[in-house]
Length: 517
Ligand code: NAD
Image (cartoon, rainbow, N blue to C red; front, side, top):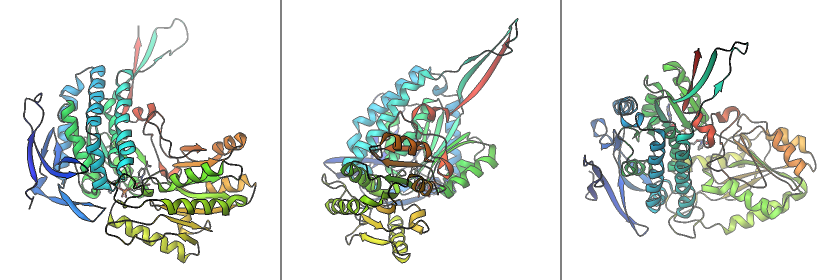
């Protein structure tokens, strides 16, 4: 039942092997989208074992976008074999690092040529607001590939003096090597960007990869697969398998030929993956997990800026943002004023079709997530927090949730402790001047992904940034991530950085070579 809107195309002239790509075509957003919908293994788009498929849904209206191949365990084994072959015998291991960099620069350029298409697909499949998708989901993905392309020929070891006693007849040097086949497992909130953060570092380090997108958001990953062919990335270097976590993600974590898993997702699944990585073959693993990031707003801040950034800290990307401020602590003397200004801003938000240019709040990613948010808010009300606005589904088709504000949230409440991953602002107050008390409340969580502070007092800002137990501290700003700045959590928000030079090392191993002469 594939429908009549499927088309066959071949890749560019420069590809001698004439790879056939099946597309779903869709005219939308003044573009004709061509969306690959099959598994990508060894440079080819292929059906899953047993031709298994599933529907991917448009959250704006609940309609089926298309059927996508659903990878099975045997498909994982094929993809890992292709990645292993490409790593051990293919071109990828033979070309020099500078040429590898050129290919990744080219990939970034090809992604840029297709940025409107990619952003439109992200709007269709993930409900990402188009204007944001163009700038962030897709824009930062392009920047990430460019940034890591530049690292390819700058991966250096050290020379280390050993046995210092004279006469010195020893020399030790270190080399940084790729680890081999990597598995990358990602969530649905920024489908292309999460893929890019990990894949760019992984490829720059010289590895090959099997990527499992979230099952609900496979389409930008498959478009990306096509773009790797256009850019001339050798076959087998990148393999992409839409499928379930329990089959595909699990098999990758268990696979004896996979040497590293890069994971972004929930803490619960992250723990499970770490265990599988240990028990199978002691794979390297890095985990970007959940968060409940505190944002502390002191009375001496620039209030309008704090309101503006406070809004963004919660409502950016419909709250489907790993570093979203999960809890705002507002100093007593400005609390009411802050809440009033925030509610005014919430009322100005434009909820609508993510493809419309003035929309700034689109549908939640998928239906189950919407249901979770409804229950989350019911729980907050039941526990006695004050629901100032929102709290429910928007009465229209699709999976829209009202931007929501809770006040009088106490530390013991569920909504004070658990991540919503939705557009829900959780506000608590703290006594005027009690910096240490608010810090200890902010740190009383097992999460440690991000945090923020608003104050004009530089001493207070630095003191607080010192004390906050989180991988990222924003001062008088929020959500300001950059490809060059390492990103990752403390405590049960995981370990191993994405972005920056630090991310490269997550995909490298150090070899120590010692001479005696
Ligand atoms: P999830 O943990 O349910 O799923 C993440 C990925 O893991 C998906 O691709 C899923 O299919 C896969 N998976 C599920 N079970 C698996 C298993 N047994 N073995 C291997 N893979 C498996 O998370 P989600 O619902 O997709 O995303 C939401 C969560 O992700 C939130 O908790 C959020 O905080 C977190 N997140 C964190 C960051 C970060 O950078 N720290 C970024 C985005 C999202």
